[in-house]
Structures are given as structure tokens and as C-alpha cells.
Length: 250
Image (cartoon, rainbow, N blue to C red):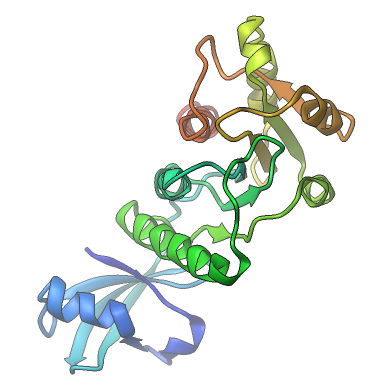
């Protein structure tokens, strides 16, 4: 069944009122009818099977048939801290990273970031990324929509990092030297409920000074396998590795 995310205030007893783009999607895109079924997910990850009761040009009313116990979230909360890349790469990272289970995305300004962030247009960019994350979460049957944070500077990234139980930085020089054990060591140490911060540089990678500063703040420098990955590929690699270690090996 098609999945939609809702706010708590949309629920009144066992009735949910869906408005805006989601109501349009139900009636105009999916062409659903009265008594068709959908799935509604709340902000805190609860899931309800619902039945359409009423449809107008402005809203769709559904009734909750049953609240179901299902969880499609990674056992570990993974935040992708992404050095701002060029073009639409950040959109790709958010879309595919959402499908693979990331809990949040934190863009940051690295020394080699070429992109200039226009503060006047920045909110619209974040809203665009939030929409991409929402659609990807619905498509991939996530319980929650990942959080999209506004870009921060490098010092702020280090400050935020103290809120995480594990933190790693992808460094291509480690991969070139054949260092593959650090990532495996971190992954095998992860426990359910842990939080993992993954720092990935932009197209030109992180500088040695940036990596050194991160390591001075309890980051573990890792190679992501024997091949050198593009900036938009590295998040997919590590999220897949986390899923394999924490879900498929359980």
C-alpha cells in the first residue's frame, strides 16, 4: 500500500486528515477511491493501516484500521556529514542515502568545497532536499523521514560530533595505503541504539589538516575498500556496510 507521512496534529481519535500535496497525490496521481487502503506514518515512527472514508478537492479523510508493529529503520542512527559537492550530487546523496537508512544529512563547508551557498536561496534548497527525503522514505517504506540540516562550518561539525557514540572520516589516502581494517572494526563494535557520524569530503576530498583535526577529536580515519570512491558513492558504500553488519548478520 502507498505510504504517507503525517504530523501528530492531523490525527483526531481514529481519523486522519490529509491535505496538500499528499491529498493531491492520493486523488489525482494514484486515483484512489473511497475504501481504498493506505499506510500512514507519524513523526515518531508509528505505522497505521488506514482506509479512505472521504475525498474532496482539498483533503482526504482516512480512518485507522489498525496500528501495526513494524520497523524498517536501521538499528544504528547514521548521520552523513557531507562536504558540499557540486551540481545535484547532494540531491542524489539524500535520495539514495534515505533509501539505505540514513537518519540525517549534515552538509558542511570543507576546504575544497567549490560550491557557494547562497543564504537567501538556502532555505529553498533545504526544502527541496526535505521533499526528496520524504518521497524516498515513502518509496522505501521507512518509518521516519531523515532530517536535513543546513550547512555548517568545519568548527561547528567538530562541536556537533561530541553528540555521537561513534564517528569516522573517509580518507582516500588510507584506501591508497591499503587500510581496510578500521571501518570493519567500527562496524563490528556498533550496538543497537548507537549513533554513527560519517564525514565524507567533497570532490577534491578532505585535506590532511582537516583529517588530522578530526582525529584529534576522536574520529577514526578509514579507507572505504580498495577502490577510490566518488563523493556521492562513499555514503552509499558505508550505509550498505552498516546495514549488512547490523541487520543481515543478526
